[in-house]
Length: 246
Length: 283
Image (tube, rainbow over all chains, first blue to last red; front, top):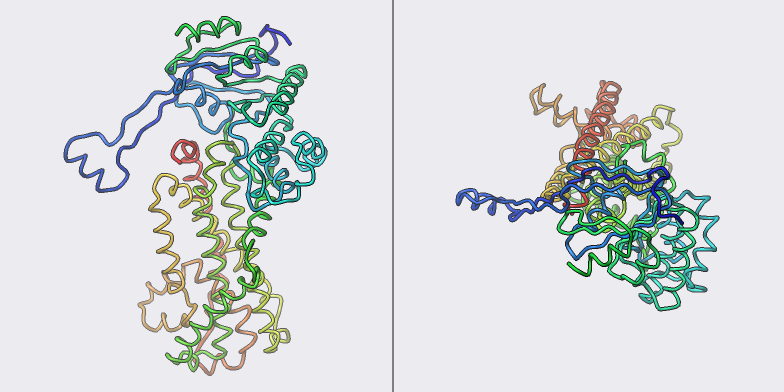
C-alpha cells in the first residue's frame, strides 16, 4: 500500500465532459406539437464538467459525493459502458466493475452455469474460470445449492454468488459501486478482507460509496465530486471532512 | 481506452462467452415446457399444414407444382431460419438491456448469438425435411451441388439476418419503431419469395426488369437454392412436364446474393458501431 502516485498511472481522466440529452417527447406527435409551439424537444444535462484525475497503479481511491453528483457516470466512463463527450479516459490493464452485480445472471440457469456465464461476461477465459471455480463457490457459501436454478435462491444467496464471481475476476483495476451492502455482517467482513487482499496485491481500486467508515478503512485517497466538478482531491481523511462540511 | 469496440474481431476474442450465450439461448428456450423441443417440430409442421391445405389443395397449386409438399417445406424452413435470426437479432440489444447498461462487453455478441441460436433451431426442421426427402428417394439423385446449395442458402440467410439484425437492433435502442418495421418485413418476406408459388409465375406476369429486381432479393435466391437442393432431386422428371424450369442464372445469383449479404453486414457494422457508444444511455 502506498499513497504515492509516483508509480506509473493506471487511470488517466483528462478533462472529461459528459452530458446527457433528455428527450421530452418520443413520438412523432410530441415532436410536431412542440415544434409548432416553438419548444425544444430535448434539453441537455451536464453530468461531468471537465474532470481531471490521475490514479497511479496500486492506489485505492474513493470517489465521494452526493447523489446525482456524477460519481456513477464517472465509473461508467471508466468501465467503458459509456464514452465521454469531451476529453479522454485512459486505462491500463484489465478493468472490471462490481457495478450492479448480478446483471448477467440468468434465472433459469443453475448456479454453476451462471458462474461460468457471468465470469465470461466479465471477460474471463474458460481456463481461468475453471481454475477459480472452486474458490468462487466457496467464497459465496452456496454449498449444495450450486446446481439449483438461480431463481430459487434467496436474495442473499444470489447477491453473494454474483459478488463472489465479480471479485474473483483477474483484474488490474477494480471499480466498486456501492455494493458492500451485500449480505450479512460475516459476509461483509469477508468481502472487506478480500478487498484488503486485492490492495495488497497491488490492484488499483476505485470505490464509490456513502459508507464513510468503509472508505476510511480501504482507501488512502479521496476525490470529492460536486455537481460534476472536482471539488477536492487528496488524503481520504480530508476528503471526508470536505464531504461533511458541504 | 475503455469501451472501444473492435467490431467483428471482438467476436473471436470473446468466443467463449459467445459459446455460453448460444448455449443459454438454446437450453433456456424450452425450459419449463412439457413438450420441450417437440415445439421446434410442431410449429413448422402446423405452418406447413395450413399452407399446404390452403395453397396446395384449395387453390390447386399442387397440380402446377409436382411434389408441392416438399417444395413448400424446403422454402418454409429457409424463411423460418431467416425470420428467427433477424427477429431475435433485432431484439437482442434491447432484450439484454441490463447487461448493456452496466457491463462493457462487445454488444455485437448478442446479435451474433441470436443468429446462431436460430441456426440451432433450424436443424431439427432440416432433419425433418431430410427424412421426408430420403423416403421420397432424394439420396439417389443428389450430387455435390445439391449439398453445396444447402450450405450456400444457409450462409446467405444467416448473413442477411445478421446484417439487418445489427442495423435494426442498433436503431431499436433509440426508436422502438424498428421492432415493428421488422415485424412488417417478416410478414412480407414469405410472400416476396417463391415459397408458396413458383418463380416462373412471377416471370410470366412481371416485366423483365421487375423480375430482375424480384430475383435480386437474396432471400429469394436462398429459397431457390433450397428448392434446387431438396425439391429438384425428388421430382426430377416431373419438373419439365409442369412447365417449370430452374432459374438458369441461379449460379450467378448465388454470387450476387452472397455479395449482398456481405454488404448488408457491412452496413449493419457501420450503423451499429456508430450508435453503439450511446446504447448505455439511451436504453
